[in-house]
Image (cartoon, rainbow over all chains, first blue to last red; front, side, top):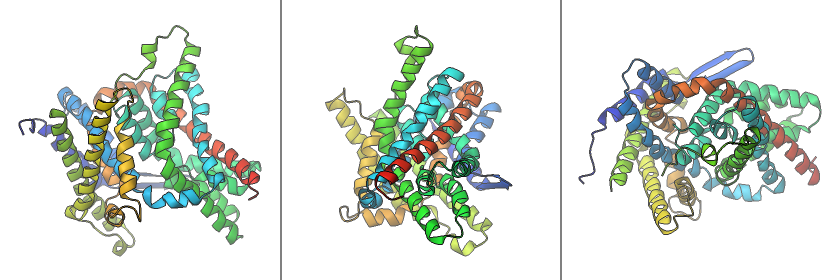
Length: 277
Length: 169
């Protein structure tokens, strides 16, 4: 028992203080014309941390103590995300090849965004965190577990998470409107594309489709079923696609593009700084 | 042993703080809701069974991770793999005797209130990352938006091909 101690009590006290303040503020809904988003207490927790650092309530030692605690506590999130998989597993097996194949679409963004990250912004390993997925809660768990949220990869995924929270709904809504107007896709395909793993983004992306076909209720029902099916599937396989396909592919692509940009770059510069265990 | 002392301590505090946060969260939501009767306020101890199971799964997953790492150091498998697999098995209806317990109890603790203590620890250590955030902020935001476009378009293209191939449209 000699290893148990509470020398770090300040960090835990700070944690509960931040939790209480953040939760008391509560969800903040903003809606003004097209722009609408909801801010969650978990985001305030980051901001409060930054403010406390600014006014020097949090010192260097506390920061260093808290750093490994992120990786340990994030395992709770993994359990919660994983617990939703079991009850849906049967449905996914029945879903058929179309829905399953469509899951690979979640790898598409890496091909889009990584070149921009490297050639336009010359980003470091933040790019890996920001590019490998649409950065929702499950992605936080994956990066938190592999690299820690206070690593370069962690900054990438957290920055992208905040972006998604603020702009994700409006962005998805505009995107599905534009894709529908383009006439290139069948509405069912677009409905399936709406299920990307975030409930709020799915609802936002589906809204223009539902509106357009409001006169055909059976069409709407079918579109909702496609979106929900794809959404559940992403919930089930997202974790493993991220872990075994998206992260390795993103790392490989990152190295490849970095070498293209700078042939003299050393292997050490391309690797993660630290690995959490 | 020191590693385990820290793990147990942090999991305990994170779970405890999540249960308190969850109470405040449901209370605040209840008070602001247009239909308060529909929002149940959960007391901290209401979610302790769920959190106890969560912590148990985490610990079991970490034990397996440590064991695998000792046995096959080269495999380099992350703990998230084992923890999520245990969570899936425990939640499998018809296979796990705990499946129903998990479904009922886990619903009482929200995903977001569970995230708040984790992000609080992240917030405490965020100070050292602020300069990097400032430097890369615009890049991260832009890249994130392109990730959304990419995901949507790629999913739509594959869906279109798959639905046509299977004759559904």
